[in-house]
Length: 446
Image: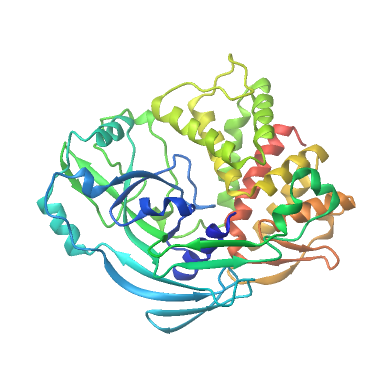
């Protein structure tokens, strides 16, 4: 996970714990998530490691007939943050518009992140709704209508007040620079200095509401919506071609317990398990070639997204041409690709190494046990580790496992044995749990 992602996720958690404030993943995309911007939700998003939105490069204002533009979004207050990179934060609210945060990250002590919230005023939205119709013949709307996509409009953002450079030195996300990691390219990836300059007016987190369209040019943005609602009128696209999405903003909080995550992962693994042995082997071969190459994994994810949109058949790089992926199996693969791309490239390489050493079942049990015990735990703490979870591992395998979970924020102390729990690690551990589940299935582990 990049430094920018660490900052935005910590910020979202601090301002809106368990809420629908979505952290921005990519610094380069911030201009496409300003108020009134139209975004798409990925087809296989999940609450467990966060709803994921895609930029469209369109604004609602550009999709309407020409007319009067609304007033600028209103400023709902400013906040100041210090040393927030590690996400080990303690908030002190002095007055409603001021938040001071103390942390233990290795940031420059001169770095202060000042942010403000901007939101679309209800009166401005009402005026816009009354005065301007949709441009029914807009090419983007025609394409989205044909694909049956749901569209969302950014209604509130948290943005920087001033340009700030954040720095992190020493242990980037753990210190695991052991000799046998060198071939994996991990030596330099965990012990180095990082710095990121975030420009003034950069969006760090946002809230969306669903755009609803009726007829050719009528539109609305309701305050409440759920996963049964469709942006475009029912009947314009066959229902069986649509995909059910798990939407964070539909419920406004995380899933109830670990059991829900486990059932969700099992449901998706069953779909992958329906592939033939040749298909599963070829999928594993493709993933092994891509683990540690985050950009290539994301490219595969986008390729499958596009294929689902257009109804095209897809073959993977190592998949024989006579083994095609069904709509259901493509959806399941998309689900797991979403989990794998949450992990850092270093973790992906560690997963590949773990497959070679056939220790995925042990690692999966460790992560599962930790999540089962702490899924609803909202406070940091030290908890005992059952010795039998790691007793079968040799020294090198122990270190590899410690590194894998450590890069998700779970610090295992085998000498005690115990582990440090931080609730901010939950999304990354959920993603790791899903990734381990898929790879164990494909690798034929018992």
